[in-house]
Image (tube, rainbow, N blue to C red; front, top):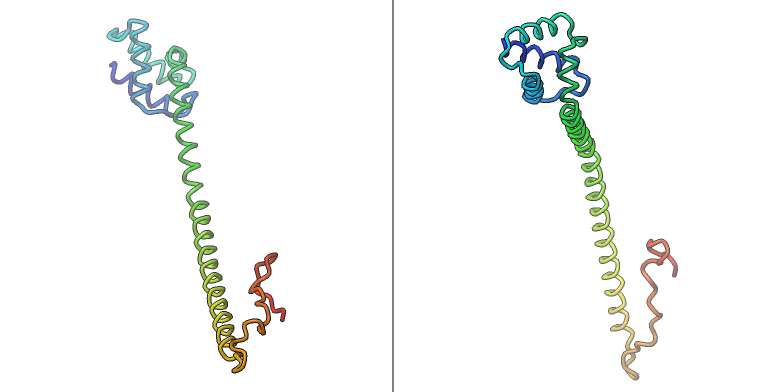
Length: 168
């Protein structure tokens, strides 16, 4: 009979309990705690009356309300813990797509930066290579190489916009 009362109470609590559903073993322990409290763990008449009350009155059962009231702190704490766990899990699952999108954006920006860096390096090598060629071919037989006859090198990009300048 005790097992029938426990099973009925657990099923009822999971269906209509005043808090979020919690693990059945906790509801089982709450019921056992109440039965120990009223010294009815082995009382066939109390168990039979409790079972009948649960079956007939469900959420309006006096026995149901007394068990919940007796274990309110435990049931509220477990229900809150479950709620926090569910919220935490939901937040984690919601963050996965955001994190993935952020990672993909970062990878894309990094790739763009690598290409820009490589383009700047090539442009710089190209400019330096042509400057060296100008220096070598601009030497005068009387005076020697003319380092001062070359114009000052112009910047490859302007600092404000970090774009190549086309100024001459």
